[in-house]
Length: 321
Ligand code: ATP
Ligand code: ZN
Figure 1 (tube, helix red, strand yellow):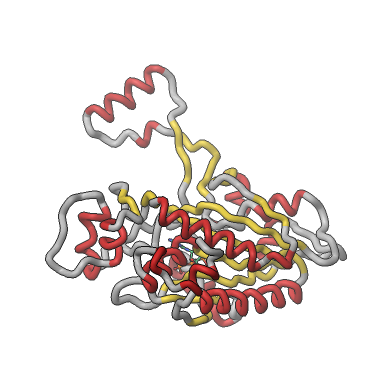
Figure 2 (figure 1 turned 135 degrees about the horizontal axis):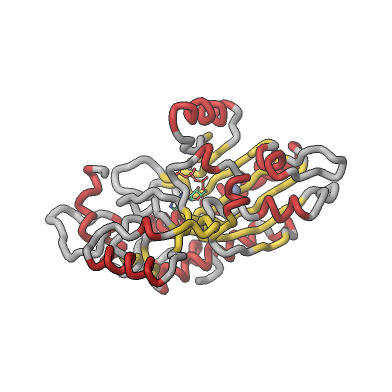
């Protein structure tokens, strides 16, 4: 736990405690009712006001990509275990994955479960895996669907997808949640198509954030690959400039937060799912991801906790929310 954020603990966990120090951003959000603590770090309810901002951002993202005439797909926030295994997520991010377990026993098993609960003992080992895994990134359900359709059209394919995503990263920073939304455009095609798509979105992303009146910087980045081997993968990702992030200062006294990412996966997903281009080659993929909660928090941080008092230009950019 971060010493700097410990004071937010009582509030984040739903306690009534406060501190004499100035309230942290998380405490302010909770105090204003924008985020509703659940007793678990990084798991929050959202108020009507928070959701109205999030929905405006979702509409804005869709408008920004209107010229793609993308296919819109929506999935529940979970994928099948088979697709999860194919994605090799466990190779890179075992520390972030969330799997769904359920009680599958009989009456005797049920009595055992209730006895554990009664005795305040661990009862979770009485559950079995369900074959369902929480979606770690909004684009993951898209690849197997496109692969099953056969070779891509010559112009490639662009998909709009939005989903709650799960990552096991409990934190006192409001920007690092365990369940949050990513709104993505995913491009599947040739390397040239992906590079052009990503270039264009880096420009669009920056223009949108500027119109929202937020400070930002664009920087090359890497994913948090697990372990010692992961460092080599992360270094190579950086060197090849496969990931860029648009960063906005949001949290108290910390560096800026990645609110959008622009990713080129080369043929990683194309090879895993055997996605083919029109001429039979392995497809390349890329995605641009907007972090809906992080962008909402950035707006609240810079323009204040009451959207009715935000600058007109910001409200207009959001579509008059
Ligand atoms: P970070 O480096 O901050 O962990 P990331 O690079 O892993 O983020 P991506 O995997 O690129 O993030 O996800 C795309 C976007 O989803 C991010 O730019 C961010 O806006 C959002 N996002 C990622 N993780 C979280 C989280 N734990 N809580 C809220 N939003 C998140
Ligand atoms: Zn993605």
